[in-house]
Image (tube, rainbow, N blue to C red):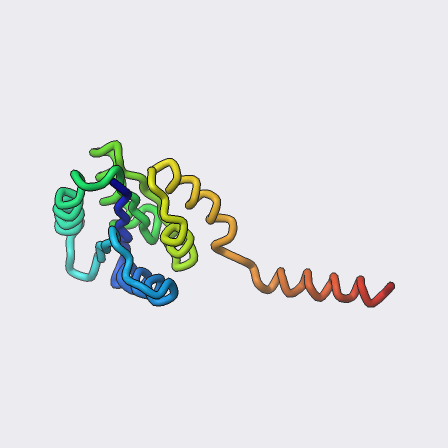
Length: 146
């Protein structure tokens, strides 16, 4: 058995994020699906979609990871509802391509491994490039002064 991943977002972000990760990795990923909360779709409609997708896979996996875009938004709220309803669901908000790549390339087999992978990736997901450039320039100036 294995884990299943849902990426849930406002608009088509989830689909685009998964497609981008698959393009970078070079192949379609198994055990990955999306939930897109688009204009005109209610909370209840999206929840039913997630519940139906979960029902289809629940007996063939050990657990489910749901990555959502924004904490407190509809995608996160439906994922939270599912996590409160089933003990084999792990939910995170703040999904991005780097986070998704880290998850997909690590191939976690348990919810504990998934949690460790995601928690370890978080500090490396958002990088202040301007600060890094400043540090590189300062280090270069220090080397030149010797």
